[in-house]
Length: 353
Image (cartoon, rainbow, N blue to C red; front, side):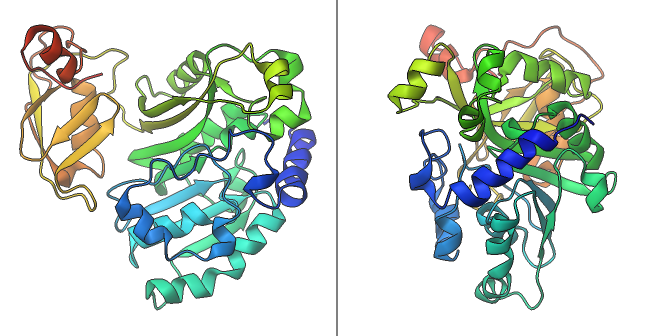
């Protein structure tokens, strides 16, 4: 692992002492945490203590679906909003671990633990907070193949050693487990003088990952196919920072990636199809795997081999009926989304991205 002490100390200072709430942020980058929340998740958020909600810094809302009974780890949990929402979703038989390096944030999260558990009606806590580095989860006792889902909200960009972060993530995920996170990405590599700018780093811009470098990094981790759930260009809303860093296009993106052995680096056609059963809480009529994969309850959809694996060899298996296997290969899968096909030639098709 690289020497990360310098930038880590700045992050601890910025998020522990400089920022006291969203109004202290200098850009809009870490203020977009509630825009995509479903009514189902908002109802849970209404049960979260107000002090926690005032200290939510993030660029998305990576709250996973279908996690009842799962072990979930939140990297850079801060004051614990996502931890507590997820603790409600996993239920009393699940467990959520929040990891952060900032004492002040963890103090807020820990102080509300008993009250939140009582509010959720749990006899014993299903949440634990640990202070540590997301680059070295072994140090804080997170074992190999021990976690079902890893989540994170606009934190990985802050790490000066992202390769170690993703290596740790895929070490601790169980086979079929998922990384589901929101973060800041860029359309080009951020120039070095901007990566070393303390303010830009604290505002989650200096350490933004170039999306193609991120793809290559996941490939090195054995994950050749990740999926984009949401993507939105970031308006900096600060003339000074715009003048300094406006040559870079920044995006808030929510990504999911699975720990599966049989993923390929392109969509391949094996004649498979999938039917969503409508059984995921909060998604009775449809489920969106990502921005190109929308499944309507009860309606069969053609899928590529990778998508079939993501639905049939993960925690989603009980919520889908997948037909077919990889016995016969029919060539590349037509990646055009179904709604685009319908607009262009009046015909339906598969849902692979």
